[in-house]
Every structure is written in C-alpha cells, then in structure tokens.
Image (cartoon, rainbow, N blue to C red; front, top):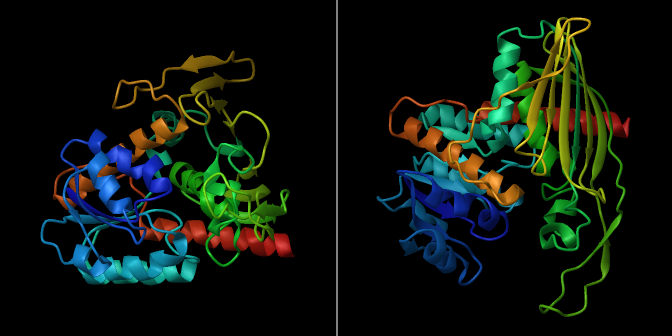
Length: 362
C-alpha cells in the first residue's frame, strides 16, 4: 500500500512516520506539509517519493493508494472530505473532527462512496488489550459488574514534552484540544471495543494547570506570554457498560509521576487486571476466579515485532504498524484482522466526549 501523508510534523514524527518503514508492503511515496522543508525531511528519513506543493497535487497522484491525515485537528474535516471526494482510502489521526456531527457527515460520505476509512485508535492492537477482549468475549469472568481504569500521563507538565509544553491547539476549546479528544479518546474507544457499548453517566473535568506560556519566537529564546488553558486536563468519568455494569475512568495528563495505565475488570465469576509496564504498554495481565481464587499471571501474546520498544513512542509506532497492515489488507481486498476503528466508532467516541463535557457543565 503506497501512502501519501498530509501533515509531517509533531505527532507524525513520533508515531505514523516511523511506523511506515516497520510495515511490510507499506511505503511512503508522497507527502505534503505547509511548513517549508518538513515534507522533504520526512521523505528523506522514512520514505522516498514526491514532495507535493498542495493537497490537491497529492490527491491527484496515481501512485497514492491511501492517504494518511496527521495535520492539526481543526483541518481534518476539510482535508478528510477532500480525500474521500478524490476516492482515496483514508487513515485519519484522532480527533477526526471537532465534534460528532462532523464525523457523522464524513461517515455518510465514506459510506456513499464505498471508501474504507480507519481512525488511528492504535491501542486496539496492543496484545494485552486483545487478550482482555478475548477473555471477556469468552465469558472468562462472567457478566461484568464493574470496570475501573486509571490512566496517568505526564506530558502536560513534563519540561521535555515540547508538544504541549507551550500553548497550542491542545489547550484550545475551539481547535480540538483537551484531555478527552487528545488522549482519553483512545481509552473511550477501548471501552467500546472491549465491552461493546458505553453510556456517559457523569463527568468531572477540571483544568488543573490553567495557564501555558507561548512558544519562544526563536529556539532558546524567552517564552511567550502566558495564555489561559480553555479545556480539561484531568477527569473523573462514570459510565454504564453494555450489560449494565458500572465503569469509572480516572484520568490526568498533568501528573508529576511515572505514566501508568491500570485496569481492573470485575465480573460475577472473576477478575481481570492489567498493569502497564512501559508507561502504558508492555504490561501484565492477572486473573482470579471464584471467591478464594488466587491471582494468576496470564501470558500476554508477543507483539508482531520481537524488538523491545525503547519508550512509549516505540510502542505506539509498533501498534500503528499493526493498524497499517490491517488497513492495507482491506484496501487490497485481502483478509485482515478488521480491528481498526471506523468513522462509525468515532461518532460514538465523540458523542461520549460531548456528553461528559455537558454533564460536567451541569
């Protein structure tokens, strides 16, 4: 599958771009970015092909089988619409748009044109998450009574994390910012993928770091003036699972601690527990059954690449590579895992985000 990429800065360099060379039968053949030199550098480092001067030029190329959109969220609706109208299969970074209504419009257009679309919810490909899903579907712990997930990230305050150290769209209420669409969306999608459904039943979404400095005008120069953060960076969410069980999500992207992901799923016949190791990924799964059942370690299947990822970005690259392999099979008309999130899934994710935000406002 030959990919044309729109947007080659920021997250594209931490995830999608390095993932492409890891993926058999997938290559980067064209790129566009409005920042001078960015697309050329991306092609030199992670692919080979053509630097396009416009989105239209990229979409008109016959050697582009699918388009990956990793531009800022506020551009996604127009760019994704153009991709679909050009008849190209689409992989879109989350958040796909700035709300559920616009995602629904894209979903309708893709269905009308018969074009496959994947949303970059790569957590679906983590071996431990797939193990949890398989165990739940097999009825290993019976009907789920409650699910308690804690996800702690530090990048909102880590001085080394320039992506959101300075004020940008992550902190804007109108540009797709906030903890929910920027990182908790993956966990919301996982709830839908593992349990089948999730309803929003209450949310508290404070802003704990209420100001961010502007980016320096020159590298190493003084920081810009402080600007107000407009959207949540922390949250406590409640929900109802498909079978009536309770769900709770404790979330933060401004914690001064090691990033961690833990998930306890309690059923009428047992418990499943996940504890992240490499930040959120590379963790362990433990199961216990019956009233007096001792916790037992459950073997997590190996990743497709038997190479130890050095950090969280390395794991994300591996998971995106799995998504690309899966999507390439669909585009090529071959059997695949079919795990990738669709626009229909993303409508549900955004709908939950909107409901929890409304519940927080009261």
